Image (cartoon, rainbow, N blue to C red):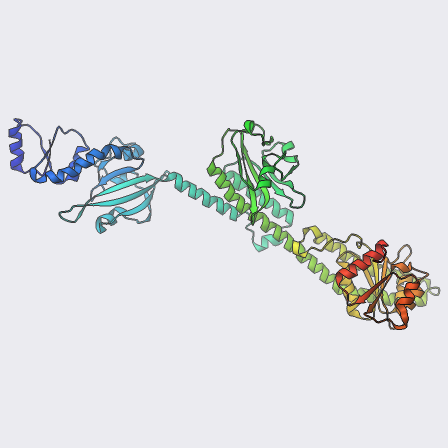
Length: 564
């Protein structure tokens, strides 16, 4: 029999009253200790002294609610000051596999787990402060528990006698957080290259490294073996393969577009920007065969600044192999992957732009000096033609080599930094009519000649210059067999003649329609423009002119368009 608050006298009276001298009486002083004894079983009755009757109502209420506690998903135990379990709702026994947990140390039952905090002595804190305390425990087998200790205070003494401890298994939650952190870290490291590494790698090598990192993270962290990544061409809408592992060759080579119709799940995701979970491909009308024996797939968009830049697709031979958690994980990884791909593109664009700027700077620096060589060579050649054939031939060779210098620089520039590889801000609008065309600019002002190189050569024109009319005439006559200037721009007032006079002297060498005269507004000494128009001149540029005016005028001359 269990007695609450019985004295020795009352216990003897109780044995006598029950006519059972051999009756074993277990006497406890508090309701909580009574509850702990009742949890062990083996008692036929409970006796409470009249003075203890009111206190006996507390364990009675606890006993009444024990069935509720037994059905809780969390563990509930009662601990004494030595962290010994004196009552439990059964969950701790279930988690530890112990037949009984009563009378055992709480931490020993859980295999002496590591206390992760925030309170590294939660039970001691609760006993000492009389306030609730909480912490996280980790077992060696990577099982995590969240414990919350609430003190049970004796109203009579105001002291904490026991702790009610709730234990929750938070392993899934903790492992998910760890996986998210691992995925994010893997994503950050995708394009984490040092300056030295970037300098030593070309674009293709960096792309290959990024592919290796993507594949490693996808397989090691996300545990996906079948992977396909496609990048969206914003201009054409095509989804171009970047990486494919485990996909059928015909699926990898399949042309797909960002379209919700007839372009499979990948096209749908690229067009809508929404993830798509296909639990059973046999029942999904959008799915187009990708991996061999695939039964389910998960596809997420690669998003950058709210814009779809590609797709990330994984497939499995099992039906319903992917969960909402997998979707969340893949979307997190896809965001970091999009940033890594953008970083890679920016690195390539920066390198191309830097190379282009360097080549343009070199070209600009040598353009005028090379022109000076050409001008000097043709001036000397005019004196030796018909007199010293060997000297004339050597001068011709100088002319060819000087012209080759600029051509080589231009070709090297195109190979180092092709136009399509440049960043969007540094690209120039294409003017195919100008590409490869040879233009002669005749002006006394070096600033004009230098500007002509800068403005026209960025559109792949071959520009040469002359200081005056006679020099221009020499340049035309000594250009070489089979070559001619496609357009000639000449100032209306040259040091040695007018623009009209130059046009007259060039008539037997060029088509007058390819000539353009440049003048200040309203300046036309001797009616040069009027006379030149009568001789066949079609275009006049008024200084100062804008770049678009220059380009349009030269293009009209090259294409033979009439004056508007």
